[in-house]
Length: 236
Ligand SMILES: NC(=O)C1=CN([C@@H]2O[C@H](COP(=O)(O)OP(=O)(O)OC[C@H]3O[C@@H](n4cnc5c(N)ncnc54)[C@H](OP(=O)(O)O)[C@@H]3O)[C@@H](O)[C@H]2O)C=CC1
Ligand SMILES: Nc1nc2c(c(=O)[nH]1)N=C([C@H](O)[C@@H](O)CO)CN2
Image (cartoon, rainbow, N blue to C red; front, side, top):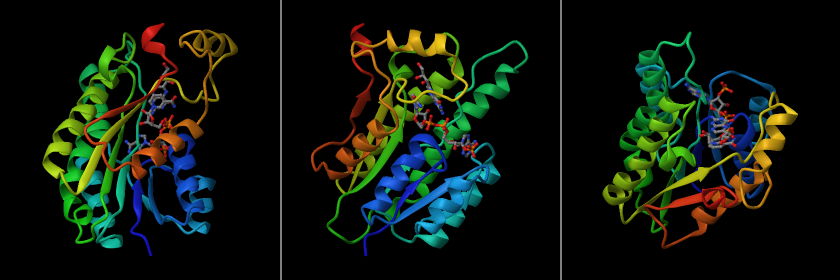
Protein backbone atom coordinates (compact mmCIF):
# COMPACT_ATOMS: atom_id res chain seq x y z
CA UNK A 1 0.00 0.00 0.00
CA UNK A 2 1.42 3.40 -1.02
CA UNK A 3 2.03 6.03 1.61
CA UNK A 4 -0.55 8.87 1.69
CA UNK A 5 -0.24 12.30 0.11
CA UNK A 6 -1.43 15.20 2.28
CA UNK A 7 -3.31 18.00 0.48
CA UNK A 8 -4.14 21.08 2.53
CA UNK A 9 -7.33 22.93 1.56
CA UNK A 10 -8.48 19.91 -0.42
CA UNK A 11 -12.25 20.39 -0.22
CA UNK A 12 -12.81 22.53 -3.32
CA UNK A 13 -11.58 23.64 -6.72
CA UNK A 14 -7.91 22.77 -7.46
CA UNK A 15 -7.29 20.87 -4.22
CA UNK A 16 -10.43 18.78 -4.65
CA UNK A 17 -9.58 18.00 -8.29
CA UNK A 18 -6.08 16.91 -7.27
CA UNK A 19 -7.39 14.77 -4.40
CA UNK A 20 -10.00 13.03 -6.58
CA UNK A 21 -7.43 12.36 -9.32
CA UNK A 22 -4.95 10.82 -6.89
CA UNK A 23 -7.67 8.68 -5.28
CA UNK A 24 -8.67 7.48 -8.77
CA UNK A 25 -5.05 6.28 -9.15
CA UNK A 26 -5.41 4.33 -5.87
CA UNK A 27 -3.06 6.82 -4.25
CA UNK A 28 -4.03 7.25 -0.56
CA UNK A 29 -4.95 10.85 0.27
CA UNK A 30 -5.29 12.94 3.40
CA UNK A 31 -6.99 16.32 3.01
CA UNK A 32 -7.43 19.19 5.40
CA UNK A 33 -10.53 21.39 5.17
CA UNK A 34 -11.53 24.54 7.03
CA UNK A 35 -15.32 24.61 6.51
CA UNK A 36 -17.22 21.36 6.08
CA UNK A 37 -18.98 20.94 2.72
CA UNK A 38 -20.42 17.99 0.82
CA UNK A 39 -17.13 17.42 -0.99
CA UNK A 40 -15.56 16.47 2.35
CA UNK A 41 -18.06 13.61 2.67
CA UNK A 42 -17.46 12.73 -0.99
CA UNK A 43 -13.73 12.45 -0.34
CA UNK A 44 -14.26 10.44 2.86
CA UNK A 45 -16.52 8.02 0.99
CA UNK A 46 -13.83 7.71 -1.67
CA UNK A 47 -11.37 6.60 1.00
CA UNK A 48 -9.60 9.82 1.91
CA UNK A 49 -8.74 10.74 5.48
CA UNK A 50 -10.27 14.16 6.14
CA UNK A 51 -9.00 16.48 8.87
CA UNK A 52 -10.48 19.82 9.91
CA UNK A 53 -7.76 22.46 10.06
CA UNK A 54 -7.63 26.24 10.21
CA UNK A 55 -4.16 27.63 9.59
CA UNK A 56 -5.05 31.21 10.59
CA UNK A 57 -3.85 30.71 14.16
CA UNK A 58 -0.81 29.11 15.77
CA UNK A 59 -3.12 26.86 17.77
CA UNK A 60 -4.75 25.73 14.54
CA UNK A 61 -1.39 24.97 12.92
CA UNK A 62 -0.10 23.07 15.98
CA UNK A 63 -3.34 21.08 16.21
CA UNK A 64 -3.16 20.18 12.53
CA UNK A 65 0.42 18.95 12.93
CA UNK A 66 -0.59 16.72 15.85
CA UNK A 67 -3.55 15.32 13.89
CA UNK A 68 -1.49 14.63 10.75
CA UNK A 69 1.25 12.90 12.77
CA UNK A 70 -1.42 10.79 14.47
CA UNK A 71 -2.94 9.52 11.21
CA UNK A 72 0.22 9.35 9.09
CA UNK A 73 3.62 8.44 10.56
CA UNK A 74 4.93 8.29 6.98
CA UNK A 75 3.98 10.34 3.88
CA UNK A 76 4.52 10.09 0.10
CA UNK A 77 4.11 13.85 -0.19
CA UNK A 78 2.61 17.12 0.95
CA UNK A 79 0.77 19.57 -1.33
CA UNK A 80 0.41 22.96 0.35
CA UNK A 81 -2.69 24.20 -1.42
CA UNK A 82 -4.71 25.96 1.31
CA UNK A 83 -5.02 29.63 0.50
CA UNK A 84 -7.06 32.79 1.00
CA UNK A 85 -7.00 35.31 -1.87
CA UNK A 86 -7.75 38.52 0.00
CA UNK A 87 -7.25 41.99 -1.49
CA UNK A 88 -6.34 45.17 0.35
CA UNK A 89 -9.35 47.36 1.08
CA UNK A 90 -10.04 50.51 3.15
CA UNK A 91 -11.91 48.55 5.80
CA UNK A 92 -9.21 45.90 6.20
CA UNK A 93 -6.49 46.43 8.82
CA UNK A 94 -3.18 46.05 6.93
CA UNK A 95 -1.41 44.48 9.91
CA UNK A 96 -4.06 41.80 10.32
CA UNK A 97 -4.20 41.14 6.58
CA UNK A 98 -0.44 40.63 6.33
CA UNK A 99 -0.48 38.33 9.38
CA UNK A 100 -3.40 36.34 7.97
CA UNK A 101 -1.72 35.92 4.57
CA UNK A 102 1.62 34.95 6.06
CA UNK A 103 0.03 32.45 8.48
CA UNK A 104 -1.81 30.39 5.86
CA UNK A 105 0.61 30.78 2.93
CA UNK A 106 3.98 30.77 4.68
CA UNK A 107 4.02 29.93 8.39
CA UNK A 108 1.77 26.90 8.11
CA UNK A 109 3.72 25.31 5.20
CA UNK A 110 7.00 26.14 6.98
CA UNK A 111 5.92 24.56 10.26
CA UNK A 112 4.30 21.52 8.63
CA UNK A 113 7.39 20.84 6.50
CA UNK A 114 9.70 20.93 9.54
CA UNK A 115 7.35 18.89 11.71
CA UNK A 116 6.71 16.24 9.02
CA UNK A 117 10.29 15.85 7.76
CA UNK A 118 10.69 12.43 9.37
CA UNK A 119 7.42 11.32 7.79
CA UNK A 120 8.77 12.32 4.37
CA UNK A 121 12.31 11.03 4.80
CA UNK A 122 11.28 7.44 5.42
CA UNK A 123 13.50 4.40 4.89
CA UNK A 124 12.10 3.53 1.45
CA UNK A 125 14.10 4.41 -1.67
CA UNK A 126 11.05 6.27 -2.96
CA UNK A 127 11.65 9.96 -3.52
CA UNK A 128 8.97 11.98 -1.77
CA UNK A 129 7.54 15.39 -2.67
CA UNK A 130 6.59 18.73 -1.25
CA UNK A 131 4.61 20.94 -3.64
CA UNK A 132 3.93 24.56 -2.77
CA UNK A 133 0.99 26.05 -4.66
CA UNK A 134 2.31 29.57 -5.12
CA UNK A 135 1.16 32.07 -7.76
CA UNK A 136 2.33 33.93 -10.87
CA UNK A 137 2.54 37.01 -8.65
CA UNK A 138 5.41 35.45 -6.69
CA UNK A 139 7.70 37.20 -9.20
CA UNK A 140 5.61 40.21 -10.25
CA UNK A 141 3.90 41.40 -7.11
CA UNK A 142 0.30 42.58 -7.24
CA UNK A 143 -1.33 46.00 -7.08
CA UNK A 144 -4.50 44.85 -5.33
CA UNK A 145 -3.30 41.76 -3.39
CA UNK A 146 -0.02 43.12 -1.97
CA UNK A 147 0.08 41.06 1.24
CA UNK A 148 -1.17 37.96 -0.58
CA UNK A 149 1.55 38.27 -3.24
CA UNK A 150 4.26 38.83 -0.63
CA UNK A 151 3.17 35.71 1.24
CA UNK A 152 3.21 33.66 -1.98
CA UNK A 153 6.71 34.96 -2.75
CA UNK A 154 7.74 33.85 0.73
CA UNK A 155 6.16 30.46 0.06
CA UNK A 156 8.23 30.14 -3.10
CA UNK A 157 11.32 31.04 -1.09
CA UNK A 158 10.50 28.08 1.16
CA UNK A 159 10.72 25.93 -1.98
CA UNK A 160 14.32 27.07 -2.50
CA UNK A 161 15.34 26.51 1.12
CA UNK A 162 13.59 23.18 1.69
CA UNK A 163 14.84 21.83 -1.67
CA UNK A 164 18.37 22.30 -0.29
CA UNK A 165 17.69 21.12 3.25
CA UNK A 166 15.55 18.05 2.43
CA UNK A 167 17.62 16.72 -0.49
CA UNK A 168 18.21 14.02 -1.62
CA UNK A 169 15.14 12.21 -0.26
CA UNK A 170 12.53 14.92 -0.80
CA UNK A 171 11.89 16.96 -3.96
CA UNK A 172 10.46 20.42 -3.24
CA UNK A 173 8.85 22.48 -6.03
CA UNK A 174 6.44 25.35 -6.61
CA UNK A 175 3.48 25.34 -8.95
CA UNK A 176 2.75 28.96 -9.91
CA UNK A 177 -0.65 29.31 -11.57
CA UNK A 178 -2.09 32.46 -13.03
CA UNK A 179 -5.86 32.30 -13.38
CA UNK A 180 -6.31 28.59 -13.90
CA UNK A 181 -9.90 28.53 -12.65
CA UNK A 182 -12.51 31.27 -12.40
CA UNK A 183 -14.47 31.86 -9.22
CA UNK A 184 -18.25 31.47 -9.41
CA UNK A 185 -18.79 35.17 -8.74
CA UNK A 186 -16.43 36.35 -11.51
CA UNK A 187 -18.42 38.62 -13.86
CA UNK A 188 -18.57 38.02 -17.62
CA UNK A 189 -16.62 41.27 -18.07
CA UNK A 190 -13.87 39.98 -15.75
CA UNK A 191 -13.83 36.65 -17.56
CA UNK A 192 -13.57 38.25 -21.01
CA UNK A 193 -10.76 40.54 -19.84
CA UNK A 194 -8.93 37.65 -18.19
CA UNK A 195 -8.88 35.62 -21.41
CA UNK A 196 -6.87 38.41 -23.01
CA UNK A 197 -4.22 38.41 -20.30
CA UNK A 198 -2.31 35.39 -21.65
CA UNK A 199 -0.93 34.35 -25.04
CA UNK A 200 -3.14 31.27 -25.31
CA UNK A 201 -6.36 33.19 -24.56
CA UNK A 202 -7.73 30.55 -22.23
CA UNK A 203 -8.50 29.70 -18.60
CA UNK A 204 -7.91 25.92 -18.53
CA UNK A 205 -9.63 24.80 -15.35
CA UNK A 206 -8.49 22.70 -12.39
CA UNK A 207 -7.26 19.79 -14.51
CA UNK A 208 -4.22 21.88 -15.53
CA UNK A 209 -3.11 21.82 -11.89
CA UNK A 210 -3.84 18.09 -11.72
CA UNK A 211 -1.53 17.48 -14.68
CA UNK A 212 1.21 19.62 -13.12
CA UNK A 213 1.03 17.76 -9.80
CA UNK A 214 1.21 14.37 -11.53
CA UNK A 215 4.25 15.50 -13.52
CA UNK A 216 6.13 16.63 -10.43
CA UNK A 217 5.24 13.45 -8.53
CA UNK A 218 6.62 11.36 -11.43
CA UNK A 219 9.79 13.43 -11.96
CA UNK A 220 13.14 12.18 -10.63
CA UNK A 221 15.34 15.15 -11.48
CA UNK A 222 13.26 18.20 -10.58
CA UNK A 223 13.63 20.05 -7.30
CA UNK A 224 13.79 23.69 -6.28
CA UNK A 225 11.91 24.64 -9.43
CA UNK A 226 8.73 26.47 -10.40
CA UNK A 227 6.20 24.95 -12.78
CA UNK A 228 4.44 27.99 -14.29
CA UNK A 229 0.81 27.52 -15.34
CA UNK A 230 0.11 30.89 -16.98
CA UNK A 231 -0.56 30.53 -20.72
CA UNK A 232 2.49 32.66 -21.49
CA UNK A 233 1.10 35.63 -19.55
CA UNK A 234 4.64 36.75 -18.73
CA UNK A 235 5.24 37.38 -22.47
CA UNK A 236 1.97 39.22 -23.13
N1 LIG B 1 -7.58 29.37 -8.89
C1 LIG B 1 -6.63 29.99 -9.55
O1 LIG B 1 -6.80 30.36 -10.72
C2 LIG B 1 -5.31 30.22 -8.90
C3 LIG B 1 -4.94 29.50 -7.77
N2 LIG B 1 -3.71 29.73 -7.20
C4 LIG B 1 -3.34 28.96 -6.01
O2 LIG B 1 -3.65 27.59 -6.21
C5 LIG B 1 -4.18 27.03 -4.99
C6 LIG B 1 -5.57 26.47 -5.23
O3 LIG B 1 -6.39 27.55 -5.72
P1 LIG B 1 -7.98 27.47 -5.50
O4 LIG B 1 -8.43 26.08 -5.67
O5 LIG B 1 -8.59 28.56 -6.29
O6 LIG B 1 -8.06 27.82 -3.94
P2 LIG B 1 -9.35 28.25 -3.06
O7 LIG B 1 -9.44 29.73 -3.05
O8 LIG B 1 -10.50 27.45 -3.50
O9 LIG B 1 -8.87 27.81 -1.58
C7 LIG B 1 -8.50 26.49 -1.34
C8 LIG B 1 -8.88 26.12 0.06
O10 LIG B 1 -8.07 26.82 1.01
C9 LIG B 1 -8.78 26.78 2.24
N3 LIG B 1 -8.31 27.80 3.18
C10 LIG B 1 -8.35 29.13 3.02
N4 LIG B 1 -7.86 29.75 4.12
C11 LIG B 1 -7.53 28.76 5.00
C12 LIG B 1 -7.00 28.76 6.32
N5 LIG B 1 -6.72 29.88 6.95
N6 LIG B 1 -6.80 27.56 6.92
C13 LIG B 1 -7.09 26.40 6.28
N7 LIG B 1 -7.60 26.34 5.03
C14 LIG B 1 -7.82 27.51 4.40
C15 LIG B 1 -10.23 26.99 1.87
O11 LIG B 1 -11.01 26.30 2.82
P3 LIG B 1 -12.58 26.64 3.03
O12 LIG B 1 -13.21 26.50 1.67
O13 LIG B 1 -13.04 25.59 3.98
O14 LIG B 1 -12.64 28.03 3.57
C16 LIG B 1 -10.32 26.42 0.45
O15 LIG B 1 -11.07 25.23 0.40
C17 LIG B 1 -4.13 28.14 -3.96
O16 LIG B 1 -2.96 28.06 -3.19
C18 LIG B 1 -4.13 29.39 -4.81
O17 LIG B 1 -3.53 30.51 -4.14
C19 LIG B 1 -2.85 30.68 -7.67
C20 LIG B 1 -3.19 31.42 -8.78
C21 LIG B 1 -4.40 31.22 -9.49
N1 LIG C 1 -6.71 30.95 -2.92
C1 LIG C 1 -6.85 31.48 -4.13
N2 LIG C 1 -5.84 32.13 -4.69
C2 LIG C 1 -6.01 32.70 -5.92
C3 LIG C 1 -7.22 32.60 -6.59
C4 LIG C 1 -8.27 31.88 -5.96
O1 LIG C 1 -9.39 31.75 -6.52
N3 LIG C 1 -8.05 31.35 -4.75
N4 LIG C 1 -7.40 33.16 -7.82
C5 LIG C 1 -6.45 33.90 -8.36
C6 LIG C 1 -6.76 34.59 -9.64
O2 LIG C 1 -7.23 33.66 -10.59
C7 LIG C 1 -5.63 35.38 -10.24
O3 LIG C 1 -4.64 34.48 -10.65
C8 LIG C 1 -6.14 36.20 -11.41
O4 LIG C 1 -5.07 36.92 -11.98
C9 LIG C 1 -5.13 34.09 -7.74
N5 LIG C 1 -5.01 33.37 -6.49
